[in-house]
Length: 558
Image (tube, rainbow, N blue to C red; front, side, top):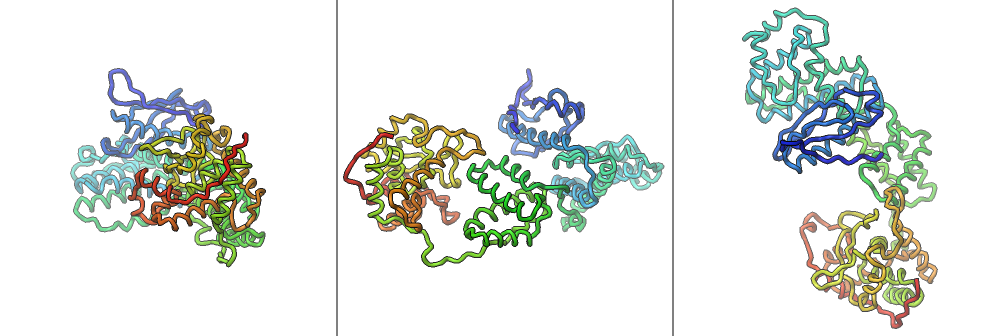
């Protein structure tokens, strides 16, 4: 689903920024004039804000701030919360279990305690609060102030209605079974917590949740009253609330789609992980993530082993995909347990299986073949990889605009391609000086001819679900290298160049941290993140690698 962009606006003669966004037509048909509850956490300049805008042709309200940055953040929060509310409206009403009702009320308990325990006011504040809650619960008063999200300053109200003796005052009013007061007093809190989870509930569930919320905020009031007296010992009532988990089918594919829409993984990751999820579904015979147990995951893993998949593939792709999805589902209150925790295919480092680098003689031969027989694109991919130790996939998505000059040094800026390319991780983004041998061989002239766009592929579709066009370049290069006689199965056609470069870095006395930085390897410790290298320092290291340069310079047409 494409989400329309919304920007804060400003009304005439007002410095406070506004939110304004069109309401989808299908939502208007089922919920016009309904209200939704939105919650904006406090920031450095503004307190937390709760509002209940009405759904009309547009939904509009004050963002409660004049700060453009705070307004932008609140706009993003509002859009996300409105989309969840629309999701709930489209799904329709559901019934809640007893466990779910108690869990939701617990979220309101925690909201109150966390909001007010730092400055809990006086014991009388919370006595008044509890008295009004009791009057609502027992139907003794209808016209009660609703509980909001600011500190409940209700002493004057409670005293005017009940007198100084709050208990006697409540007892003096006749009880009733009318639930109007319950809804008026606690309805806003109920709507807020339901909005957080994008669910609508039936009338029976709402009544039960109103009662549970009454109990939860009254329990919170007991704890806050003790805090006001200086007692901050743990509240035993806090442990009675379970975590909230939605019931019903949680489809593995739907879970994957939700994760992918939020995280925007590389297309290749999406393809690989979808394959893993489909494999699990086929194994267990259903798609419900709730029903999958540890024994299912173990038997699935055993089946993958029996099918001949390597432990590296099983652990790094199949089980990794499942683990990430369950962690995501638990964080989003969709599931409560991860059945894949601790399950791995056994690995054994057998002699004769570790991947090896090319020899220096092989690198020289490959450079020579690339120069004499390869297209310009193949030639420069091999030369850049051999002189930088970069991943072929990183080089393959370079654009002409990625080649620049910094401090009088020619560099390539390795970053995600503008049309949707991706890197392995955050540390992969870096600036690497171009070896002088590559410059001397005419690489900058090649870049000039290609222009500012992609150097090694035609533009990609840019769609996150499609494999980036540079992936085909890396695959074709690997196939071509194999065809040229580099057939050792322990030497990956592209990656063996990266292994060779790292080995040469050791012989050239390049410190490990600098070599890791050049190659885009993750830092080996937290301290490594504080280490930075100048372009000049990196360039000197790059030049230290003795390149076996071919003797013949022949460039064929592309």
